[in-house]
Image (tube, rainbow, N blue to C red; front, top):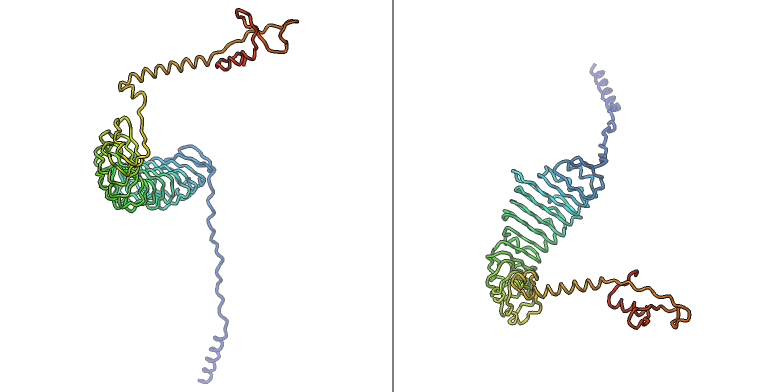
Length: 399
């Protein structure tokens, strides 16, 4: 019995080892359908108006902006209104050359995170906001000019922007301000952080709010400094390597500049006293002043290396208003003579009709002659007469 059971178990074991595995269900082919590409619209519609997809210039508000992803040839975009929820439409505008953003007044601070967008063709960027701005980060672009005019901004990041000229008009300095690569910078209405200016490779700098100028000596690339308004302490400029300085509405004593290296000085509204304080300035090569403000330029004799003087001369009407009656009378006489010359140049005469030459007349019929009714009734050559009239500036009718 035991032997029979053992043989049965052995046979069963061998059968299990040689049995083919049960077939498994093969994986069904994938039935997933890839989404088809979105079909572009026939036209762009903004504020009820239709525009072709190849439109090059648009003025839009804050609605339906995602349509702009189809306007890949757009070159000029003017946006006005409140800030949209997303600026992603900028990602498709690779041909954009001019971008103007104007944000309307609002209660909530606007956010303009534009640094995530590259605009390779952009040349001009203008951003203005009547509402407060929390964060403004400028796009990655190399522009010729950029203007930022904001009522209030907390953070301003220009690190990704390369610009030839940047003008910033702010009511107050932001808490954080990062400059990018800029050649000419104008800061109006606020005093920028000194540390950010020192590291800036700017060639021209314009400032309107008085602040210490010690940082100028650290700006090795600075060529032209423009200062406007009062309150400037100019003594640090004498220790800098600055070559060109413009002072507008500054006034006061400029004698501290006589020991500087400044070669070009622009003083559009400096008084005689201000200009006189430059006496003995040996570094000065070029001076620009106005004769209306500085009426005595005797100081020029004390400037040994002065080569060029630009004098902004007041208009003739301003001189007359100051009592120069002799000049006024001379001007009236000149105008009267010019009027007479105009009248003479407008003269026109009618030549007399030639007499028909009769047979046996001593003058050849093939010559142009005319009888002039003078006392002796002499004959004159018509060609000579016409020439004399033209030389006198008198026109002949029919010509």
